[in-house]
Each structure stands twice: as structure tokens, then as C-alpha cells.
Image (tube, rainbow over all chains, first blue to last red):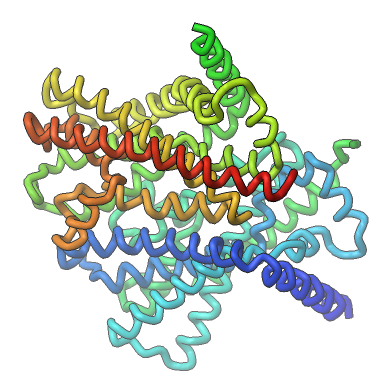
Length: 263
Length: 266
């Protein structure tokens, strides 16, 4: 089975990554704390706002942080496993990508396995703690079905992030550097840290149908918070899968038309 | 006079360098505007039907958000990334050999960056977001003048802070992590997304002691006339003290950190 072979390879890479992390422990701690602080400072912003009002358009503090946490977790998981896509453009320019093409492993998997972006662990920890705290404070207890759905939503969210960034990274096959574009598109996800209801119609439509970040956080959260939209949230896995198939096809198309820098 | 021509030379070099990465210029403008839009919607939702909160009208809040959003990115220059890269690549050895003080050379680069980054990137962001949301002019001519002085000091303070953050690369390789830590701290402690009046009492008293509010909050509140007259002068006096203090801190830290390089031998 090819899949088992690749899984074993990935685990081998993972081991090497962990060795590197243990070697540079101070760097690991700085990186871990940095994403933890970014998430915390955003939360502090929300918290300070709620010191002035009791709810935003009917959303309480913990309901907002639930949305915030769900986006954070999927974003962190994407970064953790596919963070290497950030530097894909430069790896093409430097010719590093040619080396990856020579290996007996799908290039995307190799790219992903090359470096685990452990920095994002800090982000993931904060997001997870925030989600659990929010649910506990709201006295929402998840049954087995809901836990399954939650896992499904988080995986879907991670896939949505991965697909969008894979598409912009793939553009590096033709552009000198698509990283600025990736950066801008990634930043749009900041909208989805907050309930969609506070934005204008145009923004809401954009976050639903153009860059569907709302399916990472807002719609899934409404399912658990009983805020309407619960039905739409079930579209999340469908959209994630669809996007992933499209972005993979685009990636393969890019691979086919790729001619090395020659250096 | 020789020193001035050196400064000019370095500045123009950095203008060219900045302008050659047009992709990043566009992206950071987009990121800046996106940030302002998100903050705008949140505050508008917070205000809801209220016309005033903590003595700030809705329109004042919009002006505050736009101005502080532009300032937060404009006063920074990612100098810390540049220094960290110099340290990690060993390029700093070359820099130290140059017949100009290292910090002065970077300051000249920052002057270039003022044209190619602060002006070329921030003015369009300011214009676009003002056109979308509407911005109020400065309270008075004097407010505008004091604002400019306060802004220049804010850029100075940020320069020395970034200089120090960059030097931490002598102790860790996680440049990326340091950059994000800096971002996280500046995000709320500068008052860039929340005016000081909205902070709960105890947190406000911490923020007031820290120097970070002088990077964004002080110039913006002078522009808007939130602080005026004697209060404004007092705020700027403290800005000046922080500027001088950070100048000395960065010099001392540099002297101290540079010893590490001789240990490594190169």
C-alpha cells in the first residue's frame, strides 16, 4: 500500500523534525510563545471591548471567543502541517524545489514533511483552551455526535485554509513571488475571527462564497451555539473537500507546466 | 558635511531597494487596509445605536481607527528583521567595518525608508480608508503641528525599539518569533485598536506607564484634540524622555551584545 509507505515516511520526517526542535530549545520556546502571544493579544482586544458593553449584536463574550477559537485552531493546524507553503516561492527561485522533485515521494507531501512549523503550536494551544473555556462557560456540553461534528469542522477548516493557501502558493510556478498575495489572502481570514453578523452584506458574501473563511469559524460555531445557521454549517465539509480537490488539481497543473530555473 | 552625504547615499540606496519589491508594497497596503476595515466593523457594532462612548463620538472613533491603523504600520520599519538577518548571516561583520557608526547607518536607511515605505505606502492607505469611511481633519493648526512633531518622535522611539528587538537575534535564531512577539505587544499596548479611555482602570494604569502608547496613542490623540494644551505638551515631553532613554538603552545593549560576536570569532 502506497499510503502506508508514505505515512511511514512522514513519521520518519517527523522524528527528524522533533530532533531539530529539541536541539534548538530556546528557539522553540520563542516561536511557541510568539504565536501564543499573537492569539492572546487578539483575545485581549475582544475582552477589553466587552468591558464596555455586554454584547455585540446579540453575541456574548464567550460566543465571540468560540468563533475566535475555532478560526485560530484551524489556522494553527494548517500552519503546523503546511506552513512550508509560505516559502514555496523562494524554494522555486533558489532551486531547492528541484531537489524535492527528484525524490520518490509526492512533492506536496515532501514539502509538507520537510519542516513542521512548530511555532504554530502556541497558537493551537490558545485556540483549544479558548474553545473549551467558551463551551464550559456557556454550559454547552457536547454529546458524541457533536464531538464528531466538531472534529469534522476542525478538519474541514484546516482543509479550507490549506486549499486557499495552496492555490496562491501554486501561482509561484508562474509568478516571481506569490508570497505577498498569499499574505494578503491569508490576512482576510482575520474577518472570520468575529461573528459574520457584525460585517456588511458584501463582506459576509465574500467570506462565504469567495474566500469561504466563514465556514471555518462562524457557521460551525453557530451550530454549537444554537444561533440559526446550524444547517449551513453542514456545508463546511463539502466546501472543504471541493476546494481541496480543486486546489490539488491546480497544484498538479502547476507541476506539469513547471520548468526549473535551470540553476 | 561628509557625514550628511553618507547619510544621503545610504538613504537613497534603501529607497531603491524598497521600491524594487513592489509585490510586498501592494500586499502590505492591502493588509493594512484589511486591518482597518476589520477594526472599523467591530467598533461600529460596539457603538450600535449609541452616538457616544467614553466621550468619543462615532465619527471620532472612525478617525481614530484609520489614523492609528495607518500609524501602527507606518512607524514600524521591520528594522529588527533586517538586523537579525545581518546577525544570522554574519553580514554584520561587514557592516561593522564600514566607516560609519552602525546605528547611524541604519538611521540613514530609515530616513530612506521614510520616503519609500512610510510615505509611499501609508499615504495611499490613509487616502483610501478616508474615502471609504471618512476622516476628520486635525482639531486645529496647532494640533496638526504638534502631531507632526509627536509622530516623528514616535518613529524615533520605534526605531530604537526595533533596533533592540533585532539585537536579540544574538541570543535566539527565532527571528520570526521575535517579530510576532513585537507585533503582539504593539497591537494593543500602543492603543492602535482601542483608545486608552476604553481600557479597564487597572490595565490603563499599566499602559500609561509603558512607552508603547507613545508610538500610536499619543500622536493620534494630539491630532484629534483628545489631549490639548498643557496636557499635550506634557505627553510630548514624556515622549521625548522615552526617545532619549531608548537611544541610550539601544546603544548600551549594542555594546553589550556585540561582545558575543568576538566570542563566536566569525
